[in-house]
Structure formats: structure tokens, C-alpha cells
Length: 183
Length: 214
Image (tube, rainbow over all chains, first blue to last red; front, side, top):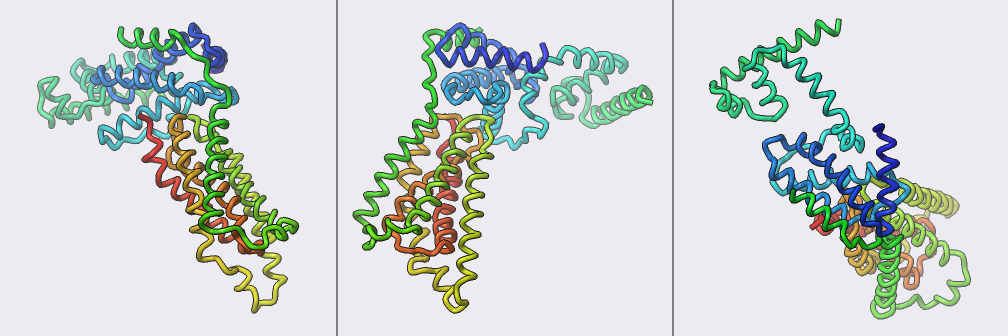
């Protein structure tokens, strides 16, 4: 579904929910849940499943208890994204992680992340599939899941230094392939 | 899954969201806060002695209008910043426009005054007290409006606190006109604005601390 259709559908549901329609509210929360899981997973790393679930639930609770602040003059997607982003930043602040939500974290990311996840994963698989198995795992571990070199080395049975060299080679090979295709 | 049960329980027996609740709660804060500021003027500062005559002239209403417009601008900003992803631009424009107009009038009247009297016109009799009196009178409104704001969903806590402070400062400065006998536009645009800036700064300081979602 195209972004503005998502917006139209959810906005209509939200307005019905604000009038007291429980079925519409369930649809809004279900749709949000489906978007929030990948949104938080991408930002916290797939290893934090319990935290991600907590954060999703907290966000749904906040959306619920503060639903009267949605105003029909605003896009619903932007409103919901701002709540999710607030919850994410608040989560980091409580855990004293100094992280920055990237500047490109605009309203659409909550919705588009999930939308194109399939395509992006297929592209990634194709690209990383060309690497030796160990290098592929290493790139996924460090660059996608966000492991440190030491953690990745431990997982794949190599020293931190070896992991670093191997990752460097893998990235160089990837650069060469992407560069060759771009020409 | 647990999240699905949560969604079920939230969707079951859903109550309608009260319409325009943000504006309504803020309006209550303004009315109660203004009443408290009025009590402050009556018991602590005292009404200006020439209130009846002054109310027949222009400057009294000029001061009241300036303060009230800034209060409305603060209201408009706070009403937006109480909501995720809403922009306070219109309120800010209103505040800047009001300050620009009064600053222009103030500077013009200052230029038309003989140079030797300009300083006296600018400082009036009460420039030292005026900003702090306005700050003190703004505290009831600020407290009530911040309490109301906590129930909403501000995501930018500093700006939301600042907007609440401007709103409270505008309410306080409007009421303060019943005490203050100054007449020069350049006095008002400087020292009234400074008083409202103080309450805005107090709101900005308190915002991140008071408005965090629990």
C-alpha cells in the first residue's frame, strides 16, 4: 500500500476511535504494532527481543492514554511516529545510552521501514551471498545486528584482530562489486 | 502473545476522547491563574491609584493588548507543542509580530522625545521591579498549565515548557497592568517583554523535568 493510502486509512480509523469506536482502535493498534516491532528492532538490534517488546507495549500504552492529543489537522502517521521516537529516546535516556536518533528519522521511517523490508532484505541477500560464508556472517553480525568486533569474533570463533581483518576484506570485496555494477 | 492481549484490553470499553480538551484545560489554567494573579495585585502590589482615569486612555489598553496578545501566542504555541509532531509556528509568528509592532512604536516615540529625557522614558520608575513582578504573578498560571500539559503528549519538552511559560507570562503581564502606572511603549516593550521572557525561561527549564512522560 502506498504511503498516503496508509495515512488516509489510519487517519479515518483514528478519528473513529477518538469518537469511541473500539473496533477501529483495535485496528489502529494492530497496524501500529506491526510497524513498531521492526522500527525498534532496527534501532536496538535484533538481540534485544525482550526490550523491544516492552518498548512496543509502552508505546501502545502511551498512544492509548494520550490519544486525545491527536488532532484531525495533522497527519496521523507523523503523530504516531513522534510518539514512537519519543519513547525510543526516553528508553535510551533511562539506560544512559548516548545515542542519536538519525536526522533522517522522519515520520515516514516508521512506515516505510516495514514496507520495504522485504525488498531490502532480498537485495542484501543477493549482495552478501557472493561472499564466503564466514565473511557474510561477520558482515551481518557487525554491520546489521550491531555487534562489536570482539563479540562477533567470539561468536564466530576468531580473535578480535582476525575479525577486523576479515571484515575489512569482506567490505572491500563488497565495495568492488557495488562499484563495478555502478559503472 | 502478550502484546495482542494488551491491544484487546485497550480496545475493549474504549471511551471517546473529549474534543478540544487541550484548549479547554489550558483555558481553565488561564482563568484560575489570572484570578490568582489578580489576588496578588490586590493584596501584595496594590492597584494603581489612577486606575479609573487610566482606563479612559490609550496606553492602559495598549499595555493590556500587548500582554494579552503574547499570552495568546504562548497559548497557541503550547496548544500545538502539547501534541506530537505539531508545529508552533503560527504562535511564534504572532509573538514576533506583536513585539515588532510595539518595538517600532516604542522606538518612534523615543526618537520624538528630547535626548535628555529618553533614558527616563525607557527606564520609567519601576524597571527594576517590573520583570520580577511579572515573573512572580505568572507562577500560578505556569504551575497549573504545566500540570495540564503533563497529561498531554509533548515530545519536545523544553520548547513545550517555554511555550507554557510565555502563556503564563502573558496572563500575568495582562493582570499586572492593573498595578503598573508606566505609560511609555518603549518601557512596555522592554520590561514587560523581559518579564515574560523570564517566565518563558522558567518554563523552558522546568519543561524537561516536569513534562517527562511517566
